Image (cartoon, rainbow over all chains, first blue to last red; front, side):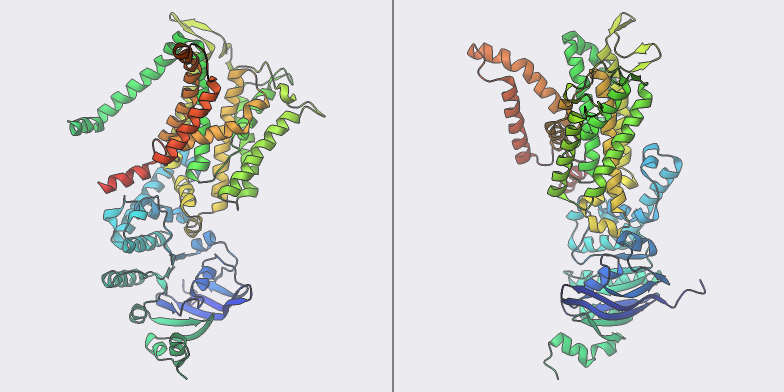
Length: 259
Length: 358
């Protein structure tokens, strides 16, 4: 892969309007391989909209982005996953009436092939694939630390465990980029510390992470680079320490009180 | 004591003994029923057909969560396919093993025809469109006697061939080893074989990549897409598979009855099949089988008991059996929704939920 571009994700001039509101106005950002890239900003700044554009849920009104050298604009979400962008949701979206294990097994869908006929005939190929799905799902539950709950219905899991399960399910799709929408929301200090360790572990295994987060302390301590969105515009980007002291960022967060 | 029993029950040998006992009971059943009256064998056969239908609909409603109120249309497509290709109506008499796959394929095609335009609809809206679809098919069957007489209209198709293999006819009564195998008894065994296959297919589908994708769509469509599930194709597959089951059941219905008319495929039949699925336990194959059996047999039992009981108690008949049937049916549904909203035998995920709480 000597020819692989240095940036994993290269988004340029992304625009997205809802009616007259510009949710994203000319947003450009590049995410490098193997970094944890933070995306922060006040409520309604367009963070989740950007997420939805990158994962195929919304088609942008303008701009383009390349992921790993491939143009993914206009692809449906289920295709985007195939190219290696997996996501979690701000308001957890697990398959509530499926067990934790089954949730992760669904995550293997995009990397497996058995069809209806295979399922009915149960040839050796299908059976081998099925047991591989099962094995991998167990490994991932173990990896995020909730293997003891593998047969619990996901809606009965504790909040922190549901967040972990969503990450395990996303990892099951073998992503190159893992996009997490506020994974620490509603977590207590211990859970946040655990999450932090988990994210570093995932990054160290070669998965790039895009992180939307409100917990500024977590973002500043964890991310290699940070971008700040405000009213659909990117107002700062760079190392956490520099971004933190950017007057524009302070203004956005404190509401224009500072000149 | 109960623990010991439970442990014994989990022993693999006990399971096999159980299977053998059930199989033996099912083998003897038609002769027991026939000694009461041949009508009961026919009723049982129809009940088995309704199990097929419920299992087919369970794929669409129970697994994929798509509310389909026009399911009986696929049954109609299968039934008319068989009737038109094996009756004097067109003078065609193709063998059943040729027609059944054609019927299944046609029903499958209709499933896709219904599914494709309705993919974006959910819940109530989908229910309304499917309801309309079911009626459209029935009205077509009713009116396609002109300009070309395709379906023979409301008179229906008569003298439909029974299943035959060489000289062996499923309609003829035969005596073998001192036992009389009447037509319905022969069909019973055939239906049992097909039922076994249908149940195995359903169980395998449920515990597969495709089955998990259906359930994932039911639980959360957006999250399912984010897992790489092509929700359009997987939903269409659910419609197509469910419809093919209906098509096969329809073909068998045609052959068993020897006569069909559009009246057998009215909306109430769709609702009935849906009630079987819901009553038994949506998404759980065992529950669906029980639901279908209950709703097939209880009305028949009532039909034979309501009148004598009333005559014995009041000396005359006060309420028509048909009225009591519908009253009890309504009451049962209301009680179910109040006390067991997940069905008589809910799907295993529900069961697991109870286990977690211990």
